[in-house]
Length: 455
Image (cartoon, rainbow, N blue to C red):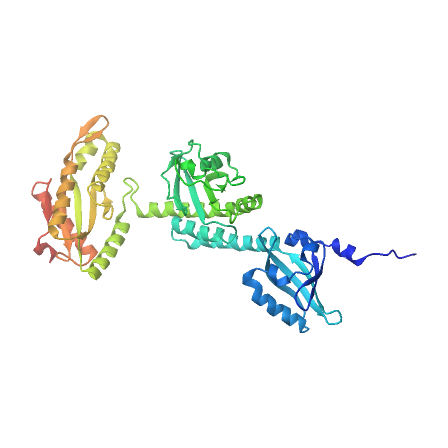
């Protein structure tokens, strides 16, 4: 049997890895055909050029060190570095190389490990997302962590999350990072926006501009800076669409591809699960810390906020006040109109009290028809009495319940730190005693605690 004559270079040209010969000066003297798919250059373009010129600038120093070690006779079967392709893209390479003293060349085999690196990055990202779902304090912190994780996978300088409110058919943007525009106001699901399109269809959307054109991505919010690329994926957990995750580019330095879309789709399932978990935790925490009827802080949460406010007041040498509010003759409303009407009245009372104070203050429900207010950063005790009077007057205005006007009045006791007490439970007790003093005097009035009550 005759052995066929086979040219070695023809065999090498059929390998998926690139086989290279590099002389002592670091120039290519031979490279197989696979170099074109890996580096973007034809073999004829690379022969005679310096190998180091193709290496990513940040990897050149250690590449030269590795090459010197190989020329000293130390083989390196697993050396990784990055090369810059002809089209400007960066490609990670795994090298296996050794020095042939007889031929005076380095013999090296180059393998493109882009897919391997991406798979490793995705595994790491999925683990990081799962961890973030457990350790993030709230949704905003979770979104911030997810943003950082996504940036390890693809360019995500401009990144936002759109969440769907099923009850109102609206989209909100609780996390929005953009180099040109600020977060938009909530929009309707039927607005025709790109985010809404992704959510309604349940499918990913990649829009890229041709040539020097742009797509009006931020135009979905009515105004904004047009971008070159817009990539959005739905966030779906257990069959329900929670919202969308979006990245976009304004410059041609990094463009999105179908591979990026598939990657973002892949990790979006884990992201959606993390968001759903955090939303559930938030709802449960709200239920545990708030009154079910009025949605005001309950006694436990109010006590926590009062303690935190006292700690701050001590450090800052500032004042705070507690108002204890009890509705006068509330039982008559329940007896004459029923408990359902009484519940609606309590709900409206809570809204009216909240409308009389600042966002930085806290309104809580102690139970029944008793409410409390924490006023922080007040200048003097008289200011707390003014707020109490504003609340009393506000509650005196009739409430519209079941097509009839219902009138109510309130007795309000006021206690301040540091005048009346320096502990939370003591402040509440003194304010409660002051409230009962207001009731004994006929109700529908405010009463500032006296020094003897605090003793």
